Amino acid sequence: MNPKEINEAVTTYLWPQTFPLAVRMCQADELPERVRLPMRDLGFKVALCQAITMARRYGWVVAQALEDSTCSLGALSLGFLFPKKGWLDGSFGETLGQDRETAAASAQNLPRLEYGRYTHVLIAPLERTVFEPQVIVVYGSPAQMMRLIQGRLNAEGRPLSFDVSSGASCANCIALPIVADECQLVMLGPGERINCSAQDSEMAVAIPMSKVDQVVSGLEAGHRSGILRYPTPNYLRFQPQHPPHIMKLWDYLSAES
Image (cartoon, rainbow, N blue to C red; front, side, top):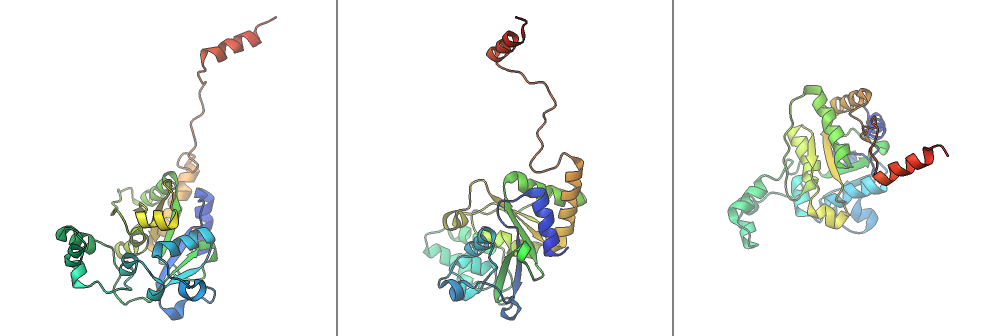
């Protein structure tokens, strides 16, 4: 499916409040002509979650390189910064007052792309995407994200497992689906909430392109069932019970004079 077809399916079946996104890791010479680079076009650096939010809330096509970045975890996850030994073994974390083993485990489990393989991450609303995405990212309510996961499960039926961390949700949106080649349910971290005003009602699902056809097909099948839909169809085929005063008023008004 091309980006516009994916966008049409997502907006038709989910009605998300922010733009569904296409993401691609690339080199500088692969950037489209119309793209915003934070340092060049805005005059300041941003966190990766900010770049994602600019695309999903403003509708911008945004690219980010190391020189545009402020967040070490985001840059590490994209392979823009080298993962030094002291970070990986926890000794750097120890200098910050962290337990060394815990710091090492946290560092080693951060989803990461190969260092130096890419120079830029490119993020665009699906409706404005002119490149071949690697990952589709959709933000929305738990009910909307449930529909995407149900769409994926429709293809095989087996349960999915997700890695959940207390931060670096940007890594789970981009690096993890590329590395794992599987859909990811993403709980938004504190950085995205503080810096990007992510709402308590929001979650995200990241879909590698290898799974997009399955997800969209599952969305369509669920919608046709009349049950697996968004908004969730409430059951209304029953006669309701009312408070006694409402029923007495009914009797009074319907009684013959």
